[in-house]
Amino acid sequence: MQKIIYPIIIVVVIIGFMATRFYKTIPAGYVGVATYFGEVQEEAFPEGLNFPVNPLYEWSIFDLREQTIEETASVPTQDQLQTKIDVSVQFRLIGPMAPLIRRDSGTFSRVVQVHLIPKLRSLLREQGKSIVRAEDFFLEKTQENLQLSLERGLQEFLQPKGIEVQAVLLRDINLPPFITKAIESKKEREQEVEKQKAELERFRTEQQQLIAAASAQREAAEEEAAKRRVLADAQAYEIQKINEAISTNPAYLQLQALEALKAISKDPAAKIYFLNGDSPSPLPLLHIGDTLEAK
Image (cartoon, rainbow, N blue to C red; front, side):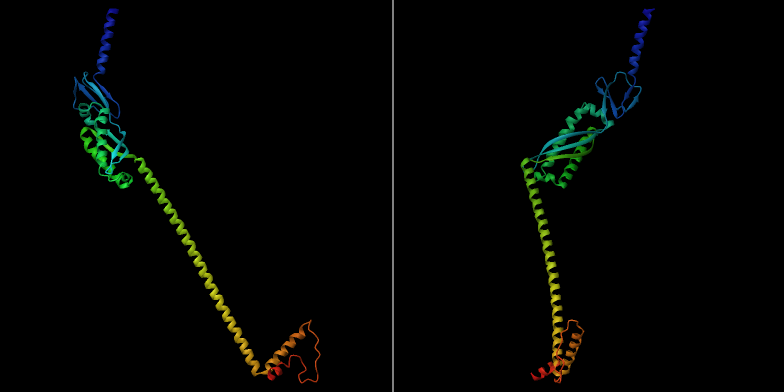
């Protein structure tokens, strides 16, 4: 009995093993490439279950998900200086072209090493030749042109090889140290100039405010002086008229004397006057008119 069971088990195991060779499951985001005795099959196998397949196929699996590589290259400019530029390239493999990649390049890593990175370095050097000065890399327009040129150049070169370039990003630009120091010194000088301009503007504003205040004070003083002149002219005119009235009418002075006596009489602290009854004008202050006439 045992002699019969063992062969059956062996046959079942062999059949089970062979059965797994008749189908192939490709993970999500990947594509399969089959090789039959060293010959790459023209059709790529998509993700999911592929059945039936030749049990003699050898399989290569390629990742179709988005990839990113980072590269740093020294880029010469027309001033014969070397600038280090850090670049990131976002790309993915083209699924239907996976058999071509398997035949021409072999593996995913070789695609990157053999085609993408060398072309990227070459484009960077070529683009650097059009830059006059190393510090021009800091110009926004220069960076935009460089990024666009790299993206177009890589797309044109890598598309036929099965690589779709989606974006090229400039991560960092490192100028030669002495240029960096010169730019920093220039920035410091510019900031100092701006600071001095701001200080000069503040001083100019303060001076304008002082001038405006002085002008307002001068105008106020002129108005006050004009007011005082008017008052002085009015007082002088009043005195002149009083003098004219006194000189032409002695009775006016006597009237004023009577008004003064009336005011004196109302004052509790008024003094006692001894009057000369024999005088034609016995009241005090009433002889002033006579004195003026005598003069």
